[in-house]
Amino acid sequence: MFLYLLDYLSKLNSNFLVFEYITLRTIFSIITALTISLISGPYIIKKFSSSNLSEVIRKDGPSSHIDKAGTPTMGGLLILFSLLCTTLIWGNLENKYIWYLIATTIFFAIIGFIDDFRKLTKNERGISAKAKFTMQLFVSALISITIFYFIESPEEQQFIIPFFKDVVINLGIFFVPLTMLVIISTSNAVNLTDGLDGLAIMPIVLVSGAFGIFAYLSGNVNFSEYLSIPYIKDSGEITIFIGALVGSGLGFLWFNTYPAQVFMGDVGALSLGAAVGLMAIIVRQEVVLIIMGGIFVLEALSVIIQVVSFKYRKKRVFLMAPFHHHFEEKGWAEPKVVVRFWIISFILILIGLATLKLR
Image (cartoon, rainbow, N blue to C red):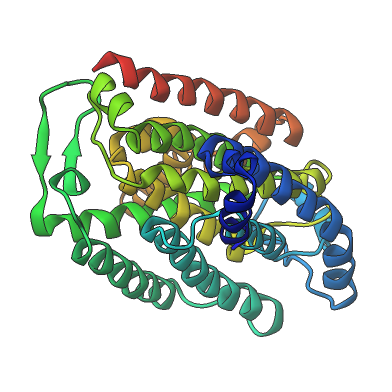
């Protein structure tokens, strides 16, 4: 939106042309989102608290979490407010990838909001897993089919293995189910990870920031050719959205760090997870997502392993799932678990970025 004003001003004074650079707008996007989050955060938290929008603590969860009862939830709305406002200010609203990300984030936020609202007002378990999955299937199918319909080049539907330069698979119609799988699995994996103060948001910020680098390079024909990665025309513009996510995520972490003043809720976890999954789809780095989002993968696998083991062996593999609760049950303090998971996430990000040259 602001870009149109800058474009007009650049005709009057060429100095305003500097704002057309993606790198500068990304920096301003981070700063703007962070500022909006820090300013609006206290008001939103106070409003949620006075409205009794407080987290329902699981009775079968770690006993140390009982003290968290009464903490406002649905703080993901703070992230979304900052994220969307900033993207509309600094983003090029004629870019299709920006709108794909906005639509995906909003639709999954609606699913998360419905789940959160039911937990707070009717049922502490929220909507049923079947209903939630059905809604996710419908939304992801709608997004995937739309993206597939507007594909303009073969590179946009290629599946690549980052460690091998010449391994490229043209997905064709299989692009749709793969996109659905990535979006849904990432969304739910992030939701499972969001169980400790600050645990989910920092990996989201780190992974998103790394995909911002991939997007910028993929959107530049020279960089993409040099690094042997798919050239995705106009994909560099999503770094504005990513910058907004990074800024709003850091702003949220200001209030979500231990002991948390507000929780993200499903409205934040499901929507941000879906957005991260779509980032990987846009820049054709689904395999790299598995590497950089290893914390999310580990958390999801821990739940699957625990459920399957208990169902067929009547034994638990972990003291408690998701995986972060296992360490709590072993006596680790919550901040120790969180920071160590952050460190692991940072290392995985570096490995993911290294694939740019390993090809």
